[in-house]
Image (cartoon, rainbow, N blue to C red):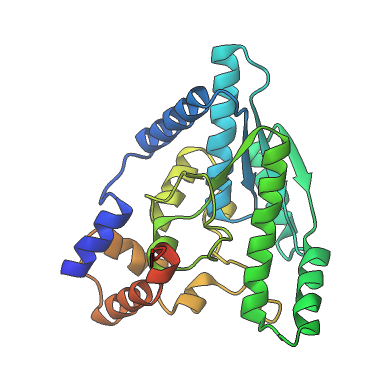
Length: 268
């Protein structure tokens, strides 16, 4: 229980939320960020077709729409980036997400050649990477592209990581976790779904099975299969509830084993 409280304190997940208020607070904070950083005009989000990027993208677009109206500054914009590796298995879902968000601009940049080039360079050096490590290459390539676009568009990269991913270390170091703004990092999976429902997102999107979809050998592999525990258990744990001891052990072991992904050690 002591470790559970420590983890909850780290993520700031609330046991109960009012979706409308959570949405409004995030929009207010996003507006403040741009107004305080007057040289920045653009939010950048990589849209994968999953729940987290759908919510993040929608909140960013709503913010930009309101900010343009309130300031009469047409320079503010939201850019959705589609960054497939070859042909994405859930391409139709991605199209539905883009339609739901209705971004100011959408760019599609296929990362496959860049990832394969990196893999080939490593092979030539005598380093053969695993399918898992290649998945991390994909995540880092996507983040690299986001920052290139942000640099050219006076932009800032908005992350899509939620609290459940943070505590289990279910993210790529310096990949999907290397962002400028953490918009939904204090929400668990259940709460992400609640906010999407409040925003009238199609049910097929907010109830979609979560997948990082990074492995060539296991396309669309469910997150829960990789984690070894269901999101409902992680959500309950983060809400301060008592859960099955086996699930608790898995969650706390994942947390302990991935500390290096959340903390940079200063050895000076």
